[in-house]
Image 1 (spheres, rainbow, N blue to C red):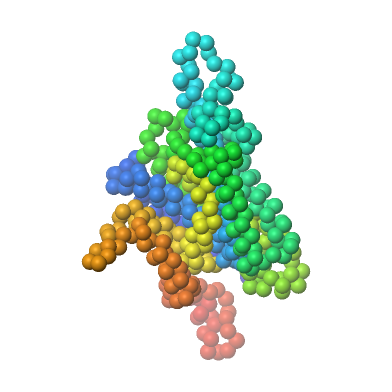
Image 2: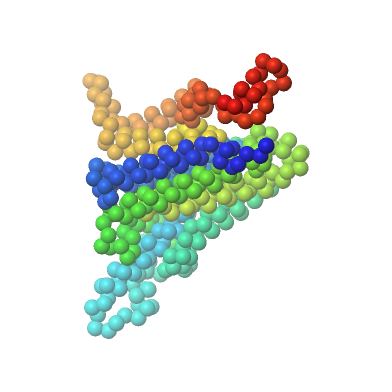
Length: 409
C-alpha cells in the first residue's frame, strides 16, 4: 500500500508544530511585538540560529544521507551573504549620498552620484571604482538571483569536475576544504572587489526602513528565518524520502553497488550537492542582515568544520538531529562566549569560558563520536521506541503474531 508523503515522514508535522510554537512564543515575548521579556539582540541571535539550522539540514543531507563529507558548505553560506550584502550596502549608501548632495546648488548627475557611492564604499581599500562583480548591486531582484546562482553555479562546476573523476571519501573532503580556503584567501585581498578584510558592514540597516526600529526589523527577519527553515525541512524531507531517498542512502552505503544496478550515481550526487549549496546560500542571505557584517573569515575552512561538528553532535542522517545539534551548540556558544557563563575560580587557576569554549566543543564532538554516535537525535529514538508502532494490515504468518489485533493498534 502506497502511503502519503506525510505518513512516510511523521516527523514533519511534529517539527513544524514545534517550530510554529517556538516562533509564536518568541513573538509574544519580544520587545517589538510582545511583552518585552526577550531583548532585540537575543531575537537576532535566535533568528541567526534558525539560519544556521537551515544550513545544517543541508549539510546533513549531503553528508548524513548521501555520504559526502563536504567541508565547504559554509562557503556557499557566505557567498549568499555577500550577494545580498552588496545590494544592502549599495542601496543604503545611495540614500546617504543622495541626501548629502541634495543641498548642492547644482543637482548632481547620476554619474556623479554613482561615483560618490563608489568612493564611499571602497575608500577603505584605497579605491573609488566599482568592480565588475558589483554590476547588479543596484537591483534587489538581480542580487537575489545572485544569492541562488553564485553558490549554485560554483557547486555545479566543482561537483561536476569532482564527481565525474569519481573522487570520493577523504580526498573529496580535502578538495572541498581547498576550495573554501582558496575562496577565503582570495576575498581577503583588497582587489577582490568585496573590500578585502573589511568585508561588508552595516547590513542591519535595511534601505528604506530608516524610521523602523531594529526591534521590528529583527522580529521580521526572525519570522523569515523560521519560514525558510520550515520550507527547507519539508523540501529535504521530500528529497530524502521515496525512491530518490533510497538511492541517495544507497550511494552512501555502497556506491559501487548502486552504480552496478544502473543508476547514474554522479547525477544524484551532483543534484544533492548543488541543491544543498543553493539552500546554504539562501540561509546566508537571511543570516548576515541579522549579523550586520560579513568578512572573509566567515568563509574560512574552520566554519565548515564547525558545521560538520554541529551535525555530528545532533546526529547524522536525521534532519531533526541537525536542527537539535546546531541549535544546542549555537546557543550554548553564545552563552559561553558572550559572558553568560560565570568563570570558575579553582584557586590556582581561573577558568574563563571564552578561552575554553572551543576545547569543550572539541571534547563534546569526540565524546559523541565514541559513545553516542546517534547524537542528540538518539534521544528522540529513545522516546519513539517506547511508543507502539502504527501499523495497518494483516501482519505475521503464524497464529501467535496477533495479526489483526496488531494491525488495529
